[in-house]
Amino acid sequence: MDQATIAIARMKDNGLRVTKQRRDMVDYLAKHEESYVKVTSVDQYMRSRYPGLSHDTIYRNVKEFQKLGILESDVENEQAIIKLQCDFNHPHHHHFICTNCHRVQELQMCPLDYFEDQVPGAKISSHNFELYGICADCAAKMAATK
Image (cartoon, rainbow, N blue to C red; front, side, top):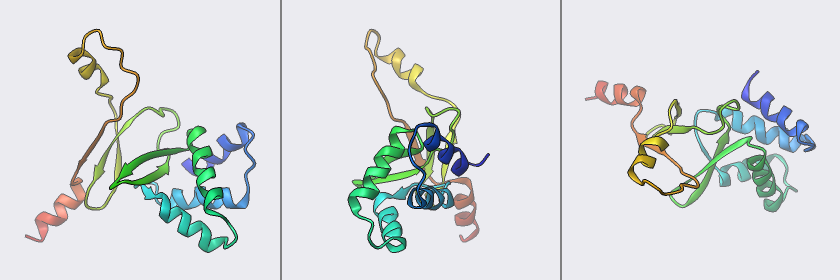
């Protein structure tokens, strides 16, 4: 099952009505599944498709999707960015984000144990860990142009 289908099923399972607008938002994010999208871009897209749709409705749906675990969110250059959950079976995960093409790759391990060892006795309540750099594809393209 693809991520969009899982997201729609999660909405249904949690009693959230699956409207055409919500389905379109999920489909839009699914088209960008390998990268984060600015919430303002989602807003612009949705308002171009549905001119009467308010900013509040769009942002309320983003918040609702986040609560259901359908979306992952972050902040880039002081702007909220979102993407469709890339791993519904393991919602706690981390990413490598290419600073050139913005492709997001899921990391398979969590470094929390390493950091817990450095703060003995502390009770860590949450964390956020992401790596940024140039992905292998972009690095190869850059090397080829030199």
